[in-house]
Length: 153
Figure 1 (cartoon, rainbow, N blue to C red):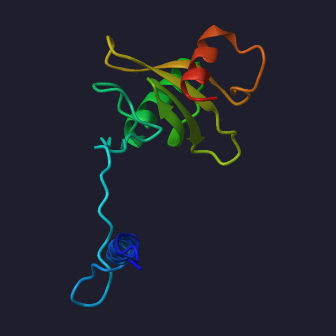
Figure 2: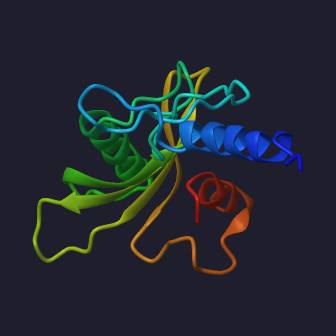
């Protein structure tokens, strides 16, 4: 009687191939080599480094000293004789700035100063100045509305 020899040989060959594919390849230090993969090429875009308060190229200077001078001018142009000695920059972006002006007298309120950068004039101009103005008030008018939107309010 003749036994079929091809069936068991095929089975042994398959087991040998499977065993070689499952950890049969390892590096000299005994760790398994990473499996070979073929992946589609990917393109990565470097993250932007633009800060939320950034200005477009060639736009206004949002530095504290520049905005202090602009706030001092805006308060004086409003008819106030209050001397502004410092500012807190609340937001400055998209050609607009909101600063809180600090007067030299302790008993005076700090007005908010909304500014817009005028490229043609090469400087900041006042949109609105006052102690009771902000972006939550209503009605605030079209110029202040544009400033608030540009500042992200």
